[in-house]
Length: 571
Ligand code: ADP
Ligand code: ZN
Image 1 (cartoon, helix red, strand yellow):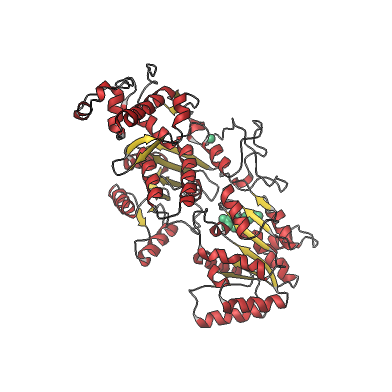
Image 2 (tube, rainbow, N blue to C red):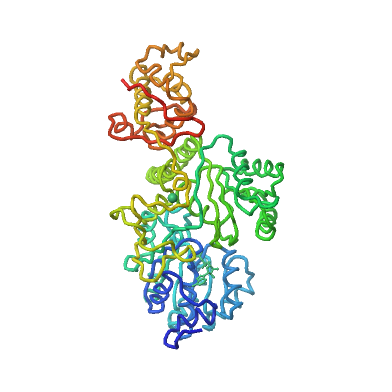
């Protein structure tokens, strides 16, 4: 133990928590809070956010500055953290709905006497008049050391788990202006971040942004054909060791699909368990428990599963359905490999996913502005799924670790321990990844896909849709469109006289599978819109540049499809 007496923060890290050194940005964040400054902390899951406020809490308590209030929406996490703190001799407690009146009164007494170092509370507590009176009393005696707002993205409607209760947290600043605040989150795209800063009135607070890279996670997206069989092949190929499987999570888009998939996997001899909000709480708790304790349990779940689950050796996260956006994808895949050992993020993705997600947004009762944001977020995820270059770069670019800088190599090598950026002197914007950056640990880097230029077929498809719309005032689905493009006579093509269209048969040399890929890409790009019950196709906003030839369309060569098709030129 090497900390000099002049460095109380390092002393606490070593003597209380038993760690030799700060990680990444922790040092700077801790120093800011001890000095009484506000801070915005953006750090990926597993990055070590808790110590960022726990250490200042202890140091400030020792300086006689009183208690740190930690606002957290996750009851399970409060229990865990308070338990862990008590174990190392730190006086901590929580107030939430699981406590009876007696316990609540006892903790309030401890709070008022100034002996607590950390108090965890749910956000709704903060607006509670009784609790506010306690805070007022502490404030009058200068015994409020720090406010830590965990999962701070919950304050933003642009975030993926907005909580009404969080809006009231601006009250902390208004009512107790001199008390330093720290807002922490593992999830924040630029939009959410801006919103968070505004709502919590943290405009003047420095932002500490750690790298979001998780170098030990290998990202992979496969084209969906027979997803269950694909999943099983993946599990057998990469996660079976002497008969037993690794522990992992399989995310599905609906409760029904969770039940069916879990049952199917069980039938294949996999120790699979379902988890979703439709199961009673006893069953959920039991399944979660088995996942945490038993070896090799595969949890098949909706996104209801995972928040606050701290299982370090989850070896894979598989998505059988598309998440809603990149934040969701990042957070869900981020549950893999928290121990820093190699882990897989595997996703099966197909046209139906795109259509389904778009429709869910369209049909939701939310306002137009909100829907617009959701669509843009979905598009960013689709671009990631369709991408033929480094997926990690795309993922990190979304979180502001950008490629704009002039083709620079990563500023810092792979971060030590796979978490925060190396050293404390990192620029707060995170690192800059060059446009040619290759991570070497995603499917596209490991097996660069053969790419073909699908601009011509894309234009053919769009002009065919245009002909349907303009010449016949009709709309059709993907199947019929492909028949027309390939010149395949069917009852329907005859009935509509589509064999007389100028686009009839112009895409003969493109296989049906390739056509599906072209259409999927065009839909993902918003060059085609899918409408209504019959999923008919119409020209979308982004159709023009493709039709004009200003926008090229690149596709990966389909597996088993051989070479890129020879093409006639579009008329
Ligand atoms: P987050 O809240 O950001 O997801 P945690 O605060 O739970 O992350 O920390 C993740 C893990 O890293 C914990 O097990 C924690 O004890 C460990 N950790 C955090 N900081 C350090 C450090 N400086 N040295 C060693 N381990 C650390
Ligand atoms: Zn890569």
